Length: 359
Image 1 (cartoon, rainbow, N blue to C red):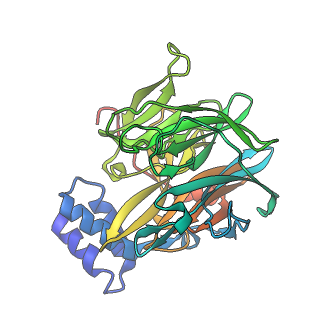
Image 2: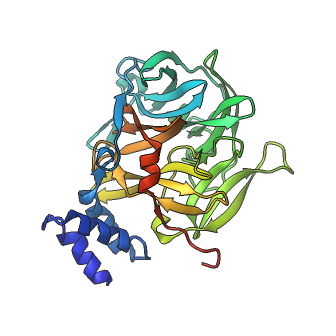
């Protein structure tokens, strides 16, 4: 059956049998594969990828504000509801040219990031935009500075952020997760804490905050075959612990973090991404994921591109406003976008992938 599906994965595209090719890719990635076969399937799958507007009714709005400095980019926004819809947009000094990072001459080889605090009106247009100030923190000389790919997160009394920092970990700039308090009135970040890495040599990034009252993060939708979370440790103020949750299906084995997880239909809804390589080009594709109230991965959506198949798109935000969902994402580390869609349509295109606790 694997050989048959591999043949479909390759040839259905040329026969204009796109639904058959999509089904074959999904069947293949729902079972363990040899590494070379899996990489081939993921590369071929990008030719079957639908854009989000082929799956649900949606409206895209580009976040069009001035970057932190002339010539800098805007990308990878996050959003959350805090009275109004609030967002943080990343602005950086580099451009990606032929797969390489290029920085202004005056910055040498240093990648710099600053962030902008944005408030949106009901039509998702920018109402206000201010530089997000601080926080200061002890740093190394590693040439990547600033809080990268912030996620807005729920904290007692309001909003905070979690983000990746590179110039804290000694020796080699390994990614670490940092948290900070956010004052939306003054656009100030304070009280930055860098969480210890779970493993000395691993990058820690893209943890998905749980919004609402639960707290903590989704660490991985599939880690050793289980959903794994990062939870507050009541025995250690300010400390965290890793918790294994329900078993995860094989389809989730390469899911990587994206947006926050928001309360949805007696569970939690979020966006994850998967990585494929088409030649030397890296491609990100996304899915909605639904965790039930026991934090088991119960449903996923078909994979999709937001706007540009076979490109790097990255979602770092998801919020619900009445009967609509608003997701925020970047394109090619160069553009920042919002997209709104009916919550009911998203719920309708999720399909079951749950695995029993007995495996």
